[in-house]
Image 1 (cartoon, rainbow, N blue to C red):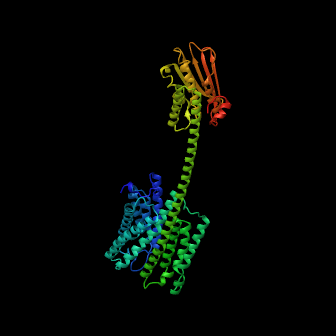
Image 2: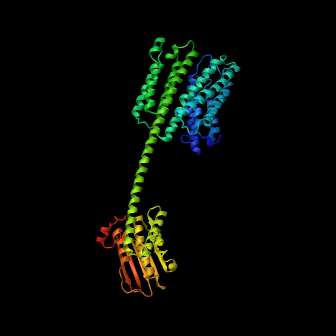
Image 3: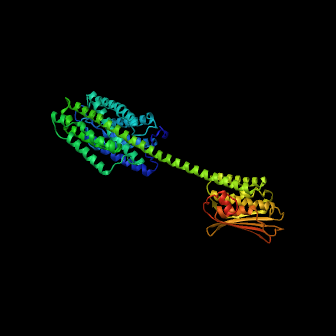
Length: 540
């Protein structure tokens, strides 16, 4: 398999650095050794001579599922040699199994390794990638693969090997106990590890829960398990103590604390139940005709009780996550709706502004279609400039170039423009563009651009927090005096009213100058026609 088949990379550990691999391997070794020692403690000294709850199988599978596929070779190696070393170091925990000089140690370890690899491969290959880990749908497939198919195959190999070596002649009993023991180990360990890994990656359980509530549920669960499964009892005690009462605190955990906490409580309760059977205590000691039947009853009880609890907790957690996602989508939709409403208001505002400007230009055109057409074209060019910038603050140099250069294209070599970067909001760009259009039109008809020896210099920058623009025309034959017409009134209207600035137009000995200053801020409201008449120039 390649990394493309890694299921749910959001809870898989990347292991892309040496330090992360060492930490992962260290944690795996410690957990595997502890699980091995507990499994040895819970072995059954009967005809089947196997453990009733083999926890290393769950630890091994969890490590393979958490690690990327490219790291499987060394994860498998670490697990195999850890289990093999722990088995020899214990001095033969299964003395009857390894009475022939421990020849069966490596064979049993190879079987456990193959079981874990088969389960991990089938899970990553057969379960759809779109199904989240630890969801109810995923757990159904997980149970079928990791608790039924793989342990059954490993148990068959193990039982057959024990029969061949003469360690045990109870093949059927050994196969059932081995199968159930491996399956129960996977059930109580692997989902808990995966759930906590997912919780570490994506956060806590969405249901509101507190540490105090978790402590209370834990105390109640272990108290009930100790009361039911640890004491010595006869058949009557076994009836009234009701083993299924352990489901009550687990239901509480499933609805309130999430899958990770529920699986952790199931893990602890399973240890107590298996420990009680190992000590010939609890309700299962009074059931069945022989120890093998009692162990099978215990394993069946664990499967029937704890699997539904895991499914329920997974379903509740998934439902709460879906509710959170829906709430987030609702928030996003409300924000989008508010954004659309703001856009509509902005469009309405700009349309009203543009209509007001057009009305002013029509009224100021004095029945001159060419003048009106020129102003509309200037308005269109600045609109294109703002569209390119997506109606965000735009550089003043681009606005000046878009408005002035098309009018003086044949004399552009006599135009000098310079200034520092200054970004204007869209409303100020439109007002400034219309004022500059009037200046450029006047220069083309009467000023420096009409005079073959004339020059136009435009400069701008920031002065005392205001935008300062200097328009200077130099002519060989400058005009005498300034005749203020409709264009001057429009310039002052755009600058002084709409932009809250100042426009000073005057003639000089060698031409014409216009100094424009305005604060860098949003525009004021557009004038209505009546207000424009009171203010002077008609520039709605």
